[in-house]
Image 1 (cartoon, one colour):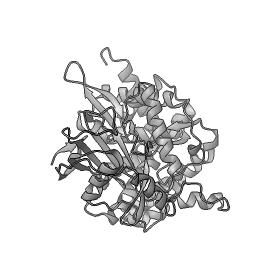
Image 2 (cartoon, one colour):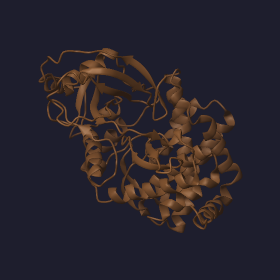
Image 3 (cartoon, helix red, strand yellow):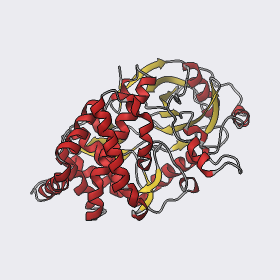
Image 4 (cartoon, helix red, strand yellow):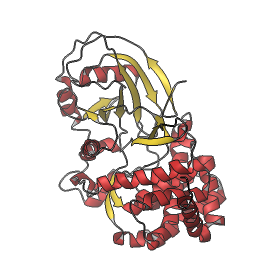
Length: 418
């Protein structure tokens, strides 16, 4: 199979069509879907707690879109005027993503400036699709960052001039949007060097610095199951962990995260964060020496939220160490971040709890979702390394991890040639 950013792509079709259809169907379907979709705020009489609960994953829920190959091509033609030359599915967690290449022989009057590298059609899961305001916020984030010289996908307007629409697919409402494809290799595809780890920390700090002045009303009360502050909800999914010792470990971590971090969350610095700066969402390119790699951009803004900046660092730190397969390597990443945005001693003390909590969140929800889609091994991509890192961090190194990270960062910074 071909791969895009180290994710397997399934070849679905290579077809050609004549561009001949009406474009007013998007507005019609949006009106039809209004009865089955939500803007994320609920009715005026709905209590705030119920609004929040309705946007969080429930045990037993299967929110992944059920999409046929013909659905994809019909959406592209009707909404974006695209005649398809090739469609390939990109394996994803609970959305459906498709890499699209246009038929260059067919003129498309809807897209004025065509992306030479293709597009990604994103069909959001039914849960996230309930909150249309957050979809608009994510689109605005990408447009904003593009103007700040941060390389990321840019949304494409559809036939109605909108950056997304709500479509009924197999009876369920899903948000559909088209993004420019960002070419390059993905972080996990290349050798993980200390230089790349340090550069990742620098890049994330610059990204967050750019996001500091961004705001959108949808983020003020936005919540999802994947926000780090919602780690306590993972208890509802612990039944997916069959190993008794690992289940007890998860319970320990959740309890500690609640008492040590969530108890002081109001004192932490908050802003809009990317929320999922991981090995699959960082695009890299070859350096001029053709040996090393530089970070080119960032993709996937589905977990963007207004959260503690510390949580951004903790989430990214988790995935950096998973890829490097070394607990100490986290210190090099932290040194890169701190070179742009200093981290206080108090915040550094909270980070190990954040890392452990993110590992639990990823491992447990991955097992749960895999139980619903047992053929999607992408959901298990961090299981083996994740449990090993969690057990090492919590059982062996927790008391000394602060010193370990400090030493690793200092050693890297004092090298004569980084």
